[in-house]
Length: 99
Image 1: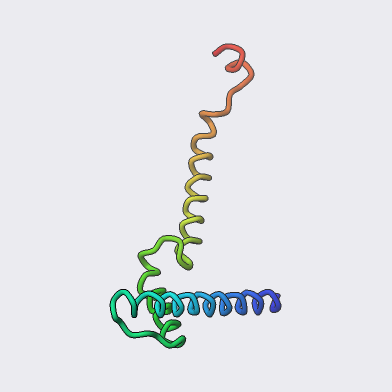
Image 2: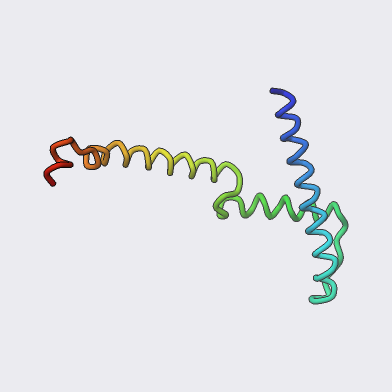
């Protein structure tokens, strides 16, 4: 159990660092040439990535816990529809023979 938690945490940190390197590399390749802007250090790219995550997470569907909540609501809604609509889908032998 603890091993899985540590593996997930290490995987999350690794993904964050890889995404930060991607942001850093893209920024330093594009922004100075296209917009004559400053180049970034890796720690600034990681901060920019974290800031964008914090600011955009409430509006971007599928980021963080919002996706899990949406899946739970969809699943619960589907189950409710199936329970209420099940009586319309279940036919007796007589109804199948005589439509």
